[in-house]
Length: 296
Ligand SMILES: [Zn+2]
Image (tube, rainbow, N blue to C red):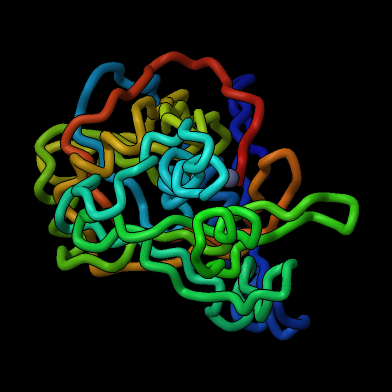
């Protein structure tokens, strides 16, 4: 959707997907869905330029999990780990995140985008606990890397087509449900930033440094979501952010099912998380557009 006012253009988009037939369309009223997307573009017409600097950032549930996928999930894929380029190499059993964080890759949730009965190497898909209460538990494995390590594959050997080599790939990586009421999380912020819709971005898969554009963002003032802001970017390091997250909501959700992950070849994925609070994250305030590899 595109909205226009006094020469200013604002765009918003959304979509749904699943491993199902057209009954998927019964799960959403198309008119209501389209109106919500259009209203987001209209709201952004009156947005002020984003503030810049370090501040408390609250990231929405569902699609907000794209940050975890890009800036942490890839570093948990066993090929990066085996090369030693991953920041998580050799850290199984170590504390790598805030103790309130449990992160999982689950390929078994029925009908969801990214779900598999078997991966592309014939291994049954599985639910893999990657981080449990802040402690690194496991990586994401295909056959090649798991044989080299003398263990079982987690059923994450995926490839785009028969022309591609299988490699360790996420299916549905997510941060698990927390204990905070999402409204309480917003109320806890005196002055901060609410990232409601995240657009394109770039992340260094092995180290986790990221830059993401926020296509729909708001100021949080005295515990309330207030003015829409545009042109914001979020910058940071995924593993560092995981150590800092201090509130996690009860509102766990997967995204609506339109993600695809690029790692030299495409794979369908979902992402997910509850609302999360990052006490300090760099918000870039320029109006520049970010383009390039979106990953999901
Ligand atoms: Zn990706």
